[in-house]
Length: 208
Image (tube, rainbow, N blue to C red; front, side):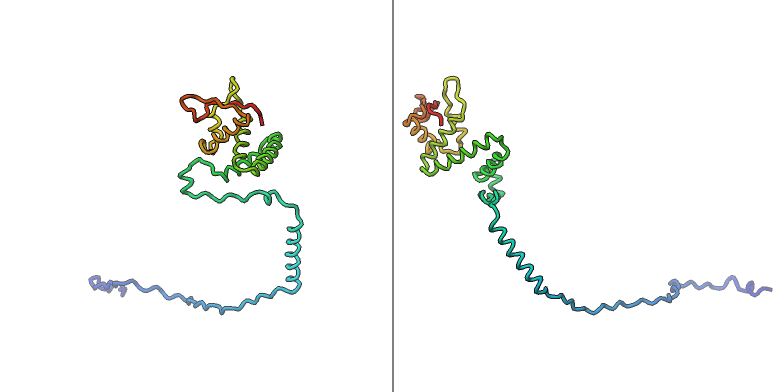
């Protein structure tokens, strides 16, 4: 009789609460040892390298001194950036300095006839400034009237002139300049009884 069959089927079976531990691996974990910090030595520049760098700096400075002035050297500096608050308050408005930048850009983009004319107008305006604020205001008004197309009667509406010269103070600059031009015989002013202090229409008698 087989001994395996002599095992009592009613014998108690022992159940272990924890699984058997896995067999230990034959590979051991190695410990990483940090490498010692090594000092890095940088060779100082040679005397020849220092002399060559010094000669290059002198040559660059000499070229900057003898070169022809660039266009940007003769232009005014760029206007500072507008603050966020000023941009929100005057949305769409163009500042005085920014308008000058737009003017220079438009001159670059204009036709040759207008580019040559811009030189003449700039020279005329520069000469006007030498004669004071009143002479300059008269020149600006005289030029604006000379470049405006009159109506069928030969007159220019004061409202149109005021809109073009919107940066001029009406009572402080524009109207006094027109009065002085009228006294000089350059323009003729037509007034109304409703607003006698303000011109109604202006007729240019002597073109600029």
